[in-house]
Image (cartoon, rainbow, N blue to C red; front, top):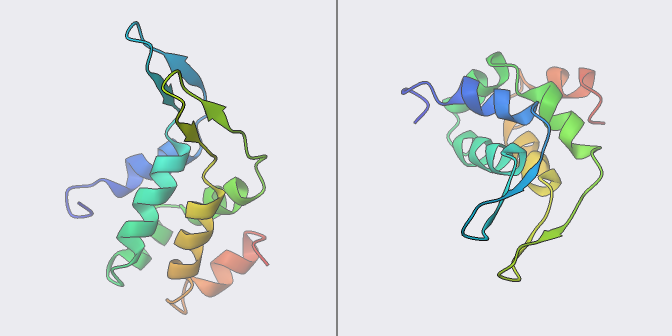
Length: 111
């Protein structure tokens, strides 16, 4: 996934405004921040991806996502979707395993 170039678009999704839309079928779709943070966290489990994620500029938007107010929406199916703070924290924790990323995380204000 990383080799296919997915990291930069995922980082871009972190900085887009979350919106909720309802399709004609009645399904609710949330903005991609939560899922981008989740995907980056999963990719960061591989230590080879950790510097790539940092180089793509993911750390500042992940830190920013930590301080974003959590909003909870319930779709017509009754499912609840929460903000991406949990996944942002998970991604940052995994990125911090790489000592080169630690000062970047601190400089971005995560501490």
